[in-house]
Amino acid sequence: MRWLIATALLAIGQSAFGQSIEDWLEQYRFATKNGDTESRNLTLKAMLDHRDPRINRVFLDALFDPPVSNQAKWCLIRVGGSAFPEGWKKIESDPAKFAYYVFWVWTQCGPGGAREVVKGFEHTSEGVLRETAHLFTELRYGYVQLEWLPMPDVGRGLLRAMNAEDPVTRRYGVKSMIYLKQEDRDRALLKAGQDPDAGVREQSLAVMYLFSDERKFGIMASATSDVDAKVRTMALRALGLEPWSYPQTASLRSGAIINCLKDVDPQVRQVALSALLVWVSPRGLYGYSTKPPSAEQMAAIDSVRALLREKKVADTAYLLLRDAVASATALTYLAYVADERVFQRLIVGCESKTNEVSRNSVVLIGAFGDPRALPVLRRMVERNVHRSEAEESIKQIEARTSGG
Image (cartoon, rainbow, N blue to C red):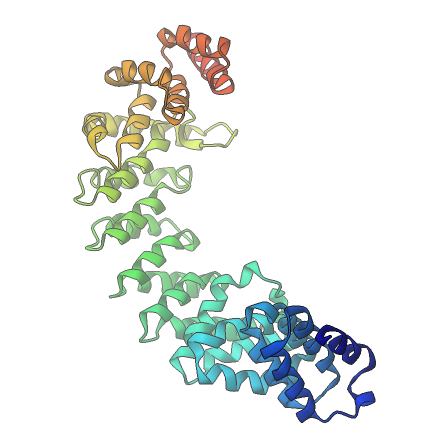
């Protein structure tokens, strides 16, 4: 019955019932307490006939009511700018609770909504500033068109966020710095790398790829000595990204990573060893690229591999086989460098009854490249156990044996 009433309201419109705005608000309150989700959604949709600002308040309240939030969002997009004044009242009452979601809806209200969101950067409330910066960390995944945004105002707002007293606001600002001009971005990254808050320093390393020149590798290398383990971990991840870029920095980068193999934190040790894998991988410096390396890049690969041998990284990796966190990465490293100490371990692993151990061993024995593994791999193909992985490993070994 309630659904039929709501449907009639939607079809005929409020004027035919002679309802005042107070009657409609009462109707919605009744539907909220007693109606099912469908009747509540229909009531919200019917209320779009009104132009009274109090209706916008209803839509904003419904935005935070999960069963009808999608309908409320659609209604707010329809009413557009007329809901902005009520929206600001909602935001200012509790920025942490309301601002992010109201702003997200406004970004879908066209250029006017996007400009309204940017006003949050100039708001006197630290909470509003924080949530505005928070929104920009996710904005590129939404429906907003970048041409809707007044980018100079966005840049000034993000710089203000990066200089805020609240460290969370600074983190959001750093995470969103892709919207800054290159020169502003470079200065901001340099400053963020020295921030007293570890979270800001960690986030600056996560976006360090945005830095415009090779100075970033010096910053990353220095960060591997940070007092905070999460910052050291992020520095290592950053150093391991795009290893084929700036080959002249290969020794600096690999040296900084090697120094972390004996870090007191097990996660740091594991990430350090993982960051070195690309230098010893059979695919070389290029990872998944099919483009052949240049002479300069090949020289960089050779120099790093020589450094790894000089520093006896294989011995360190062998010790890390007993490390619960780093053992899998250590086994991969030793397979890549064809360390004889793990060959038999890999052969036994191929026959393991544990599916994951068996598959990983089949893959790594191919990287090891020893023809002694061929009988085991061919048996696995015959038994149809990890057949595709075994066939690929056979190809790798045969190619290496033939000099291909």
